Amino acid sequence: MTTPIRGLHHVTATVNEAQPDLDFYAGLLGLRLVKQTVNFDHTGVYHFYYGDEEGRPGSLMTTFPYGGEGVPQGRIGAGQISVTSFSVPPGALDFWRGRLADRKVPVEREGVRFGEGLLEFRDPSGLRIELREAPGDPRDPWVASGIPPAAAVRGLHSVTLTLHRAGPSLAFLTGLLGMEEGERDGDRIRVLAGDGRPGALLEMEVAPEAPAGVNGLGTVHHVALEVDDGEAQRAVRSTLVAEGVQVTQVKDRQYFTSIYFRGPGGILYEVATRGPGFTQDESVADLGTHLKLPGWEESNRPSIERKLTPVSLENVR
Ligand code: ZN
Image (cartoon, rainbow, N blue to C red; front, top):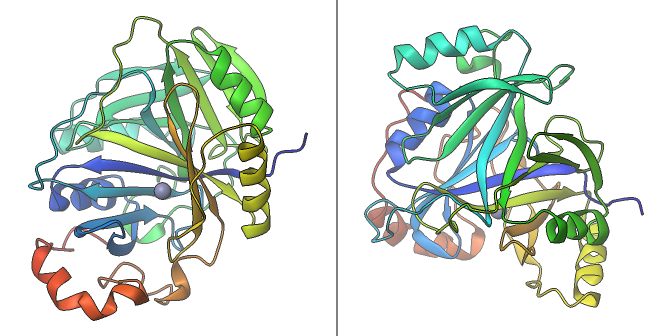
């Protein structure tokens, strides 16, 4: 079966306060803030999208800053995306060690996995973030970040799925979603989404004793996989429905359309279309500079803006 999945589209996390989130993902990691909008299902909360210059699928990290909304801290564990990894060029970790030390962000793990150097640390909400030295990643970094291009983040590298058992999720991803099983390294199994390049990888970490993850601040909410268009999305939906998987209707997310469903380990997946993309309501030059609302919320703008905590884009380029 050839997979309609082209790679990762985005990772979405529930985070704490908005300002430290902006300062970390755009300021420290050097991703571009490509869109400021609100959670379409809870408009009192921002939705930030970070990525490359145009916010291409596979470069995108997105956050819901729920700080102050009564959402408790979550717990990272089994049945979740436990680690979000970003791709940097081989040799770049020296630069990042220095940058993290300057900003007083402790490194929690260093090592080599699948032959790639890695550095793990936490974002301000407690999310586990990794940089992976991936050879042969042709994607262009966001050059205005002020980070040397030889070290800058290229986009997502992979996500780590922490699971009690590998079998059911492996069957789900390779069977229903048509992905390919890849190499193994210790307790990890790679699954190739699309061509399996950096940005098109999932890594299953088998941890039979891991406590179950609990959703909340500092946890990944879901991972989105990219498909070409609505037709490919409908085909994925039909396959899942035919196998008895509960799948949402197609939802309009303004910059793409989405369906959502849970995998066997409890992990929440989304399948999202490549387009129409982030330039449909802002020019490439202006991406991320203004609060954008979907058309159906525009008449509520004054009340939405009153509820949101003002943020400074001083450290955001
Ligand atoms: Zn999403």
